[in-house]
Figure: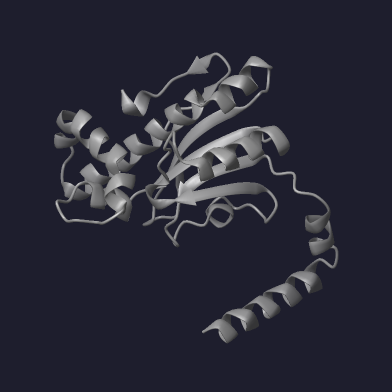
Length: 205
């Protein structure tokens, strides 16, 4: 399997160089993405592919169920690098319908270390139990919970000292929440964007 992977890489590299001989030289010279993407580790939701972006156009952090933990040093380090070094203008928290991490948070099945990781989604499910009960079925409830998790992630990113400092010095950074549909390949805006002095999140109200 590894040899197959390396062979695919060689074929891809040769194809890219054939189409654009300067492609890799440009990428090696500078990393200057406009977007920082916080997404799910799900293999079906690669950030630059679903967003129609090329390598070098989006800086990415991914974890199970795209959860923003205030103690996640990996995410915070990536966020700080994106804001302070790369000077990104747009931060995107992107979840997806059919998320296994969201589903696990609603189950009474032991999931080992994942139990701690998905606890914020469990809390959301309890907080929005009445709203979720209005959804027409189990799948719709899980998809709605995935959207609420994105909106919560947007809020948590905005509350970090990293963003607060950037906004105080006038950095024009905006944070957005998107949801990806596995069944149609479409990204949808959850209308929970936040920038300096502005925050609204209709989907989570």
